[in-house]
Length: 389
Image 1 (cartoon, rainbow, N blue to C red):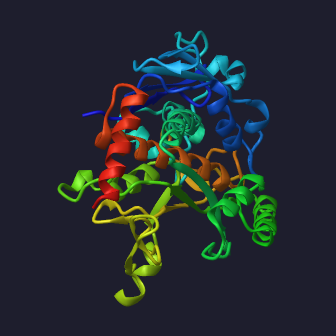
Image 2: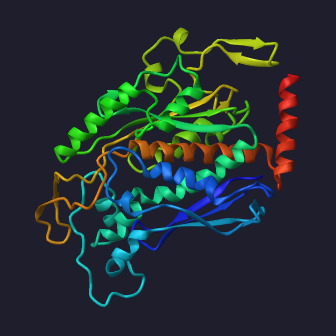
Image 3: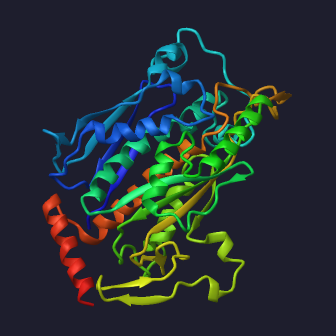
């Protein structure tokens, strides 16, 4: 069974972030520029911190790509951390000549204390460097590979911000998806609605002035997904569960919805389930609505796949919260390091990547293929089967 497998490695202020991707068929055209555009999108956004002024993320392929095409072998890629030069005294892999000052004051809401307890580390930098959302640059690069694969099959994945703090954008129910995507890509906050974007920026500015942070929500949409990805037969093959896990594992994401999600739980079934009809011109079964978010029984149904991720406020606050020094056990303010005020726009790009990765895995799981040609033939044959159903 073909699968899209991947791992990332690297610390926030280490030399570089690294990822290995396995399962991409041979013959897929793939250039660094295909990925760099998403890395640049992840770095922007109103409310981002000073780190984004230091880094200019660019991907480098170390293996698995030759002459602009994948080889079918594992792809190794890296993203350099320019800021590493400023942290050589604290982040060298060699034994320290002078022991750097330990970070011992955990931040509420971060992995600092839980990770310190788990791994028996009293210098919490050993935890926070890997737990940092800087790691998502590598995920975004992996997602760029997945999106390139999906695009060959006519599948497009994009995201847009739907809320920041108490400010929500109107639902895009009457807007064509192409317009939502275009507006979101042009926005500093990845928001498709200019009026809402203005109020979001005001909320971020107010939080910054008070030394606070803001969270929010984003929506990821996948168009062109064929029916039949995922399965109902086992819990771990249900695609909605896999999508939920892929979004929930992003740093600071605390809630995930598929389709109407939370709001649908408060409505009667007659207003939630999507009526089915047959479109003879398209030779396809279609839904007149898409409250299910493109998934029924853990299987894609041919409609747009729609997921939302809800991000808590960033845990590093300039207005430090009460904490305890893990060495002295004395009360202390939590540590503060350079941080964002709001990173929901960046998180939406990461969410886009994670959904693309999960869909690419589901595609390879169902259709397989050692080459792009074989994969495309398998998908084409399946689409003919669907048309004849």
